[in-house]
Length: 445
Image (cartoon, rainbow, N blue to C red):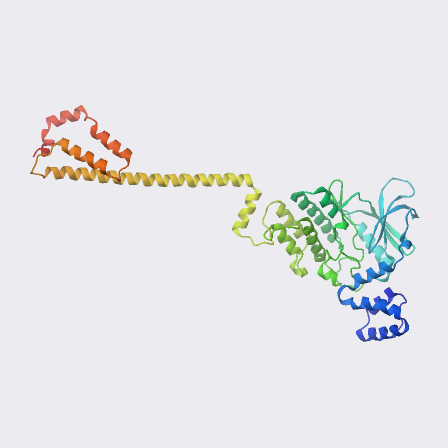
């Protein structure tokens, strides 16, 4: 059973063995090379959970960092200056054109040679060429690429700015500014997905914000691309555990939903203290579901939800109740909603006043009718009385008392009725009464 001589080579080849073959080799290795056995065993113990990350952590620790120092060297047509940063995937240097044909600040990333054990140089270079086809204002532009000895390198534009987490601390952007920024990041990832490219390593350090507050995505994982068939050699080799999806941590095949999960984590970084009933919280929850099928179908759908939040429109991922829709409408059109509310209140108030006024008039009418009935009944009662003479004055006095003592009769009605009783009759009425005395004769009968 011949295997490679290095720890990395042995580990990758053992991954293809069945348990019996693997156990046989480990027993033999323990006898012949105990030190190598002790290095391999911890990696195999973590094979089911986080095997790739453990492997790279081990590899980086064992790599002589001095071998990676290309500072102030000329490689191809580029002159490297200082180191900008390094990570599990490689080292990045600041550079410029060595032939001085034109001035251009560049960043050159050298890929870890260890990746050649997983992907050939040709495959890595193809991935770099695929990134070069991405042309989007929110993605760091890839200009060139090549091979230098055992290294594959990628030439990119150099971004002057802050990482996303540093930008949030130093600039303290508003809620709308953060939402618009997240929209731009969605647009960049959406563009990459349209070209069959996953980022597969979304985290604040890989999102730079320049002086114009424009995001620039960097460090696409060169070992990932969207495929319709699972490839055993296309596992993620470097990622941030805090932002990686569950399937990425498990070493499973990745789809666009893995980037959507990371986007949900980025949104949580932007808005860490959202209330459970808020729209942003709903988007965060849906984006970071454990099952990929329960997340947004695409980054386009996620971006459209953010647009709805900015425009105060109901989300598709929330239950669309009438109260929720009304609340969104009020936020979307506050002035119109205020005017409409004022008109509704005025209309209701006017209607209530009319109803109350009509009730009052109806009540007064009823009281007046009752009073007239009392006066009429009094007159006819006086006509039928034989025991005493009833004069007009006594009738009027009795009527006045009835009016004043009636508790249901409003004051202004009492005043009107008493005033009418005190007003002299017109002259014509007096003359008519003199020519026709029999009209009142019943008062003296």
